[in-house]
Image (cartoon, rainbow, N blue to C red; front, side, top):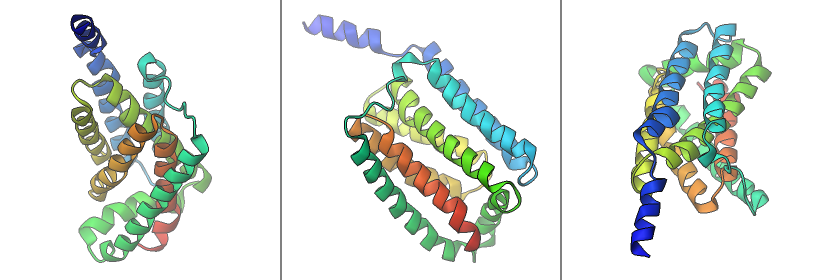
Length: 220
């Protein structure tokens, strides 16, 4: 029995080719897309095309990774959604409180203010749409695909996934997004593990990101 179990565990381990194709290449493509979006004119076509392309990378990768398909199966989806909403609003309040301090630090406030110009000068409904879609896409990729296809223990995979998440978001050129990646990524990872689905993590992410998008421009 021990031998059978060990053989099963070995067969379930992702191969280097799977890690490259399911995690590393899509992460690099997403980082390039975010870099293009960051350099694009505020609220312009290039920004929206690039951000939607990043979401497409995440969802196409998910479609091609059968191990990660049952991402949203949940027995208590309603309760998970409410829990995610509560955590997301809590994070939002903390970040909004911090915004009062950040606005007095030009090196931090400048890049954030530039990023928020897409909400000020672009089509708000399109910005909301791409923010929500990318939020779900990030959860699908970093909290499910990466966790399914990276090697090692759960803690090792969670740490690598979080580092990748920080690295990809850093392509936007906004230092505070690294802090945001940690603040959102850690509870989202724990919620995904606790519930066995991405319902809570997605609601958490969307409530936080849309709140930041709609409220933060008035504070910075």
